[in-house]
Amino acid sequence: MKLSELRPCDSCGGPLKGGVFRIVETRFAAVNAREANGTLALTQYFGGGGGAFALAEVMSPTPDAVKVTPKVLEKFFLCMECWCKPVCLAELAEKRADAERDKEG
Image (cartoon, rainbow, N blue to C red; front, top):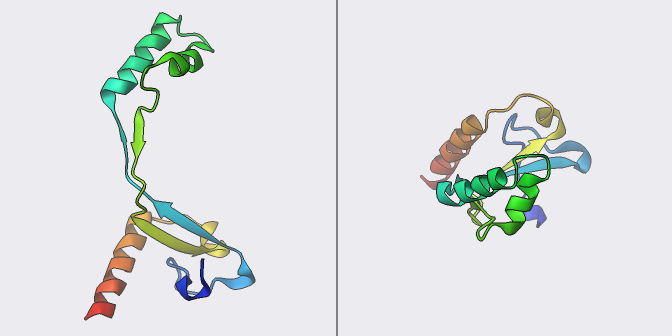
């Protein structure tokens, strides 16, 4: 990441002090019910015990029941002080959208 890509903390608006901060990226994820049901059915077939789920994932023809989009939707910068506090990502997304709108016009 380039220095030009840095910006203030998205939560408090303050600087990212100390040189250490967090970047939180959001993406969409969805469970494919058919593939999940296939793995869960195999789990039951193998007895439903401790190792049954792991075995079912290995034996399932489609073990990846959760699909995650490769595109990052939002990237939030948080200073370490804000990282340790409760943060609402939806509020941060709204603040970022408002700031982008103000910057454009």
